[in-house]
Length: 160
Image 1: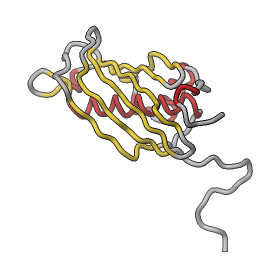
Image 2: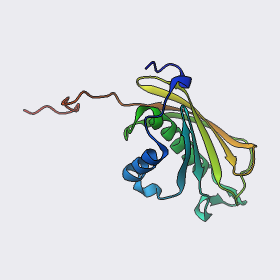
Image 3: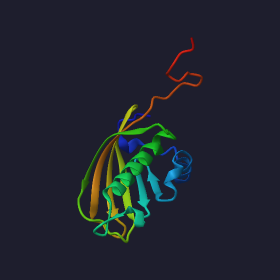
Image 4: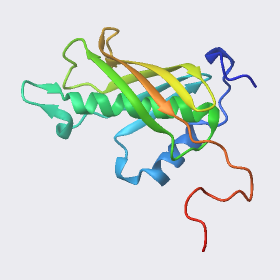
């Protein structure tokens, strides 16, 4: 499969498989983040907004919005490549556009724009549930670890 066109991506992980994988490798997330759907190169996620996500002024904090954008991008990358605990964010730029509602969950739509062998570029749009107005937009790049052949040793020290 060519990895150049985002429209060619077919999920190799289902919503259930991604959810179970996240619970296994990031148990500290609890049930704050919910994978709503996966469709090719697009993942939709929800942040269950709680008191801990709010800041003075009655709005969802920037770090909470960043966390949702980052997790949604990670899930959008995992869906077509499979479970990769060591895929990591290498770049993120986020624009905060308007104040999100404090009494509504945040919904993120993450779209993989380019999926290569070692890097993925993802666009994430955040909105408050029940609204079509964007509250933030993020552009992220993820580093994808190289695949190892079965039996191949991990890089590191060699025995003396």
